[in-house]
View 1 (cartoon, rainbow, N blue to C red):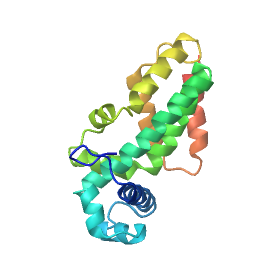
View 2 (view 1 turned 90 degrees about the horizontal axis):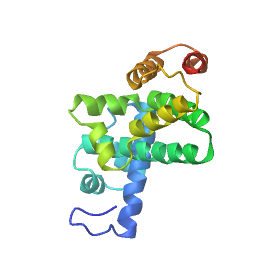
View 3 (view 1 turned 180 degrees about the horizontal axis):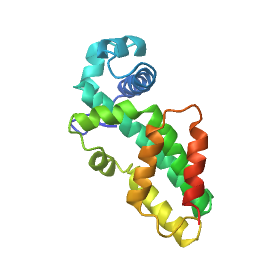
Length: 183
């Protein structure tokens, strides 16, 4: 990470930033988005000014948390692609995205409502998970692991359906979708 002037962050500033991000991710996931910034700062063991220097608005903090999750998912997707066949990689990423989406739905909704373009930000930060999923799906279709008639729009709708499910056994619903996607 760098400061706005383009200089790298000092080691202590980088640690503080990482601590704030980790704390915010935990708090937002467990308690929702209404937790005040000063409470996140307190739990991270830093001052409110420290949070504000790194994240001038609460939306900026939401965005940073969500982009960090997307970076992790991007690394996960890249690892799957390198170590697994296309079908296994695709279904592994699909499953992880549903679980991650469920855990961090509030962040995405808050950013969407604020006019934040998460796709553009993810592309700029080289963590566009949608593009990785699209590539894995195309490879899995080419290898015969996924029905060739399934479009990326279909897949996004299926993920949205999984995220909307509020029943006791999400794994069962995910398994139904995976089965339906297979060739």
